[in-house]
Image (cartoon, rainbow, N blue to C red; front, side):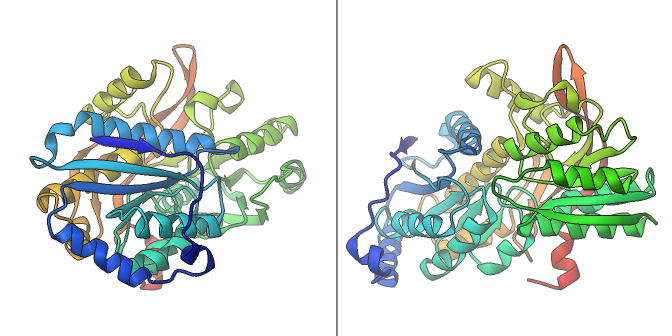
Length: 408
């Protein structure tokens, strides 16, 4: 293993800065070189390492590096893995596309991975299609992403997977719901999925709002919810600082005192950021550090040993772990000689019955992850506020958006 993290500097060649001249030729030469017997497999990692959302990149790196450290001996003899890391700085489609072009043309990577943000993933899709470079997504959750290129597979989740089962569960407990989501594709997916699940159970949606993704003031939106007096508020905003900000507005405006419950289909915040204000909140997600599975206990123990007892692996770190497992399977099956189309065939048939999140596989028709969905509650355990799994509300859940839209 040879991991290399380079500084946040874009150094595009003059041709790339003006236009991507000769991308096809450069990629063809890179592929020919790899097929001739290169024994160092290069992985380009694009994530967010700076700015207010830098924690995403840190968590991805932790999961990825932990997997590589613990599985050095699983690579074919003589084969090494080199990771070249780039910082997209946050939601920035143009920058993400440029970084992907650099990694492919200049660094000759054979895989791309990482990616927190849906707009960044969408911008990279045509690049990997032209270059024929497998692109393994660790986070971005809009359903449409994998339809944009046959060289994309996703190891995180889609909003439909987490949200529709939650809507069905919520309809058994509440009659009237309000929906508030961030105004971007993943938020739109979660809005539609929750509404479909809630309505299927006989529930009524009394209002909906889409909130700005960048620097939103949540107080006016939460006041509107309070005025509508639903039984429950379903919301989706990206995990971390935005989720913390929405929860603060919910608490400050006293929605809980008015009897308005709050639920969400992703981590409201990381375990490290949870406060007692969140105790009692119900969420749905495919992974929780508290999950009572032997593989998960081993993963959590190794993570804490590597990074500190106070840190729980979040869903982002776990997705990075699973992504690297799939990449290592593809490397082993090809003995380190990476062919992109053979790689995608292997990935489409990937499965792991012993992932920390439970049994997982890739749907060969959509190249999306298939996994269980868990109902969780935020509780105080041993003096810490954490997410606790309560029950499985969906088994081997596929992305319903693609089935509804007959997209392949």
